[in-house]
Amino acid sequence: MAELATIARPYAEALFQVAQKHDVKAWAQQLDTLALVAQDADLRQFAEDPRVTSEQVFAAVTQVQTAAAKQDLAPELQNFLRAVIENARLAALPEAVAQFHELANAAAGVADAQIFSAFPIADGQLAEVVAMLEKRFGRKLLPAVSLEPALIGGIRVVVGDEVLDTSVKARLERMKVALTA
Image (cartoon, rainbow, N blue to C red; front, side, top):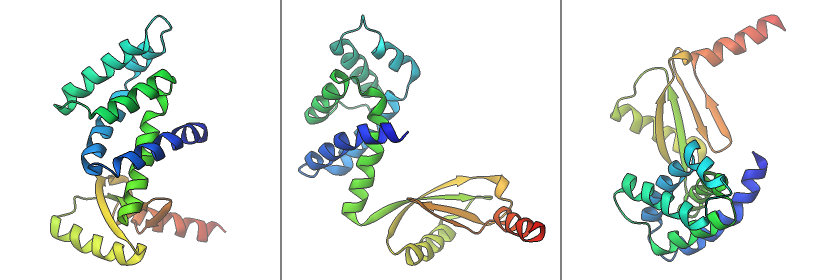
């Protein structure tokens, strides 16, 4: 995994530099679709076939991306995709997109917050939770909520490499460790 991150970093940085001259949000949406397309196992197998040319792979990827996003790729993103395919780095594309998002968020002063909850969170409650988390983490957060019933109660929040776990499951685990120590 570290190898993919290393391979993807220069692509993400170059993408971000060019995206700053354009609409970063629009590019992010197109890149998300491209990353989903690049994760398809059948497409990757097709791309790795030595009998298939780079242009055939490019045509297949752009056709699927256009159908999924219902819009054509920006010309700069087409050039980026061609470079990725010609260098046989299609497998690194999802990681490059993830790193692009990290760079865009850092430039905007925001961070993605993955919130895991045992129960659905109402919009009003989510706003309160996000406000509290923004104070805790010291930056604006973009929340994404996922249900995880195994938590029993409470929430677990992941922001970058930081984790805040206030779930019942985590408390029970801490009690177990304390009792068996």
